[in-house]
Length: 232
Length: 122
View 1 (cartoon, chains in turn yellow, brown):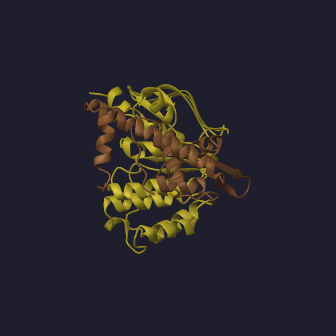
View 2 (cartoon, chains in turn brown, yellow):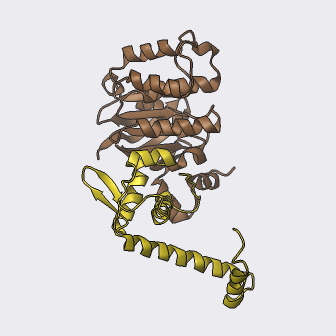
View 3 (cartoon, chains in turn red, cyan):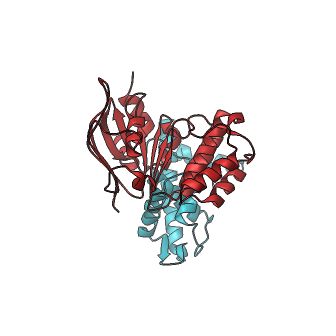
């Protein structure tokens, strides 16, 4: 087991607003990690820093020991909060696009998932519902044989049945040597698929613990603990 | 298989309990090969590492053994399985008696009720 992601005193400010206040965090390979926290706690900021879409104000973040770059991004599969593909593309064109861009894209895996979810290869993204767009984006993201998957709210817009399918898709497709970081509000839905969770609060890591350790020590689920800790 | 998990206990212990039940109830026969870790994980919707941990516990209990390349198998020791079945049955019976006691039924009354219900369907 080795370290896939490491943050040291990682800080990000947007003007005067501090999104991440000097966090230290280490993630090992082979884990599925939940990144949990209320709105505005810094989840998306952390994910964007990890794939180099943002640069730190202070401190550092390293992926496999390196600063986020084209090299690290070749091994990082990122699912953005909102779909980042041109709306005129069809599902098939989006797969072509991923195939061109990413050497680790497994076209056969993508085709297979598309078929299982009864999605039309010829449908344009523009005409897809919110849930269908999310499914397409997730299929593309998980069809890469990456070292690190960064999934920013992958299940927010889909119905519970599809949510289950998506979780199974994640469980089926990640390799034992890769790491999956999932940010979400829907803790109860993902909890049993996670190894460990990171609770973010106002830009700070307030908890980093394994799911079963939390359940064992507190006698309650991560979802219940979250509701308690972040009660308004 | 239908998997459900309570909120108040670790997932691996619940997985372990449910797999044990499947073995003692014969859903997996003695000597039968168990599904691969990933397969079980996807089926139950849980983390593969959690499945691994549950299976290690079953191995430690002697209910399951692993062969390096072929995977994991249910023990061929029918006596070991029967012993586990008996243990689970005793635990369940104890829980039943405790629940009856809270209802004001002592052992005698609880047994009499069971006797009375003998012919009924459950």
